Image 1 (cartoon, rainbow, N blue to C red):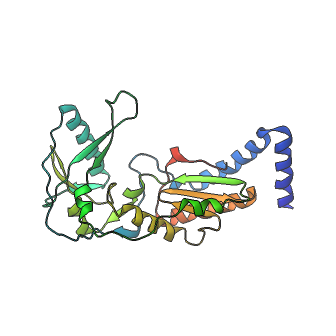
Image 2 (cartoon, one colour; image 1 turned 45 degrees about the vertical axis):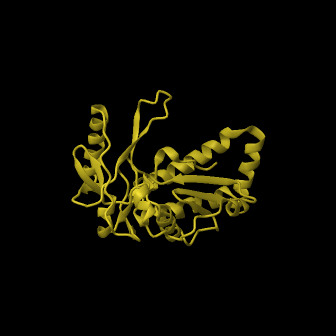
Image 3 (tube, rainbow, N blue to C red; image 1 turned 135 degrees about the horizontal axis):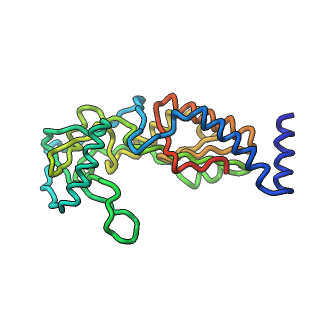
Length: 261
């Protein structure tokens, strides 16, 4: 009977437009969002506390790599200090006495002016050259596309600051040390820019969503795609994925949702 109800609504949707179906879907979505409000990141550093896996850095050559500190303007140093203070407060980094030292790269805002500062990255290219490579596979997009045959509903979710939701092993922290005008710091979580970070994250997500992969869920790095052939199934599938994310201690990025499309 419930399938008939959804089929009738779908026909009605085709006949009189989007408003009837959109209202029904919005009510359904609001209920789900309220139920799983705790898995939504409430700010840039509300990034979850996943303990299922830790990232370990293994090197072919243990000789320390130390780069000279790049000169910065007063404005850049002030902005970097703000980033450091926020990361220290949220347990992302800690002061370091490591023999390793890498430089910060400031990524500008895409505002056309080329003056804004948006993200602070670390140039780990020299470290990546001596890192033992992880052979963990990254999914093939072409294979994924074949699974969408007959699909009517899609939801795409994105994890908040995905890599920072994975802890580094304690022995690996020293390898991530970076230079600032205010001292040397190192990461406690997996930073962006490490050569094996994508494989570690993919492995985590495959483990978290293992029971649902290729049945109604796909994972490509920090993107989660939920797909279904009916609205009834989609509601159930979305709840299952959100419950798995909650159980893993992960957080979603609210700005990147594409719900029930």
